[in-house]
Amino acid sequence: MSRSLPEDPLIRSLVVQARRAQVSRRAMLQGTGIGAAALTLAACSTGGSDKPSPAADNSANDPTLTWANWALYLDEDDAGNHPTLDRFEEETGISVDYRVDVDDNNSYNAKVKDQLALGQDIGADLVCLTDWMASRWVRLGYTQELADANIPNKANLEPSLLDVDFDKGRKHTLPWQGGFAGICWNKAKVPEGLRSVSDLWKPQFKGRVGVLSEMRDTIGLIMMENGVDISGDFTNDQFSEAIEIFRKQVEVGQIRNIKGNSYIDDLANEDTLVAIVWSGDVTTLNAENGDRWEFAIPEAGGTIWNDNFLIPIGSPRKANAEKLINYYYEPEIAAEVAAWVNYITPVVGAKEAAEAIDPELVENQLIFPNEETLSKVKQFRTLSPAEEQSFGAEFQSVLIGA
Image (cartoon, rainbow, N blue to C red; front, side):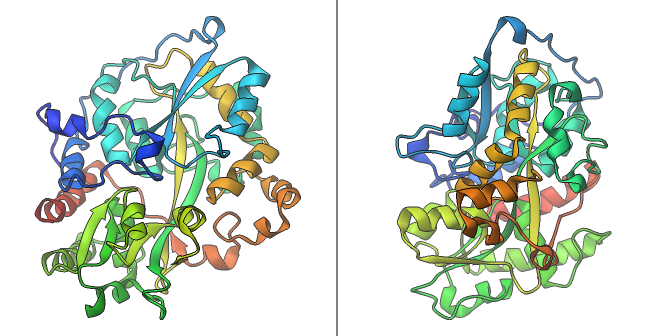
């Protein structure tokens, strides 16, 4: 990864605010071709040594809040409203501008990193980003420290999520939803299904394979296929071996698309028949287009990740953001969201609340995974800054040639 990047207007044009009509969850790069490679290049500056200071909080005088999130990541009714968010506004008097602004971690970071480095308001008071990008923001001083007194419902969180290696004691981040990366196939076109990542490389799928532009998911699954524990102290050589498998499949034309959320559109129009995907998206895809796809964790294992709440360093509405976080940690609210998004809720008590909504929900392994399901997945370990640069450069070299 490069430590500096010219202010390329083309790159910036790729990260304009996503509109609901234009995207499926985590989409915006559809049809750009250069998107993943260019945005990886844009996202890798590690910044200087001086960390910005947090903005003064003006929540008491400004009952508003802007929340930047991924698409299809909050409960929604047929009219396009968000019932739980509407109730939050009614209960608190805080007006929330909910924006589908995050298409993938790299592109969002590329859009706001310069402002963050200066401690400026990025136009969002609350952002949801995946563990590894949350780690980078915390390390660079781009987030404000959370006040536990304003988030008493933090006590409702799954205990294992209360302390993570990139944010000891959860002082700057808190979990929003979690999920898996695995494999997916068109059931009508691939009736035999898939069992492993290597199944994607079968000759009959040439030019009809999609993979994710998130390095840790695509390369993580390939590494697991190679027998590597991605949560442990794997070596540079083990990472490079997976990269070379990935590179070969791109160069021979086996892989058709390397994308963020727009992979959903590729599945829907059958540009791709098999793919590496995110778990909850397949449920949404089936709900919108008919029960046409199947998701599975590969036999060698899948990845697990969390997206996290962060309050950007320049936000002047910190207390308002904390009030919203607290609200979504109420078990009944968490259950309502989980039932719609089909991702793993971090809130203890949400399972019991979900049973009241629909008893079948508690058996959904994408929302409430049991120990057997969790034994099949690993979290890609936190990388050092040097590893982020070297591993990212290797991944980027494939994207540029794709």
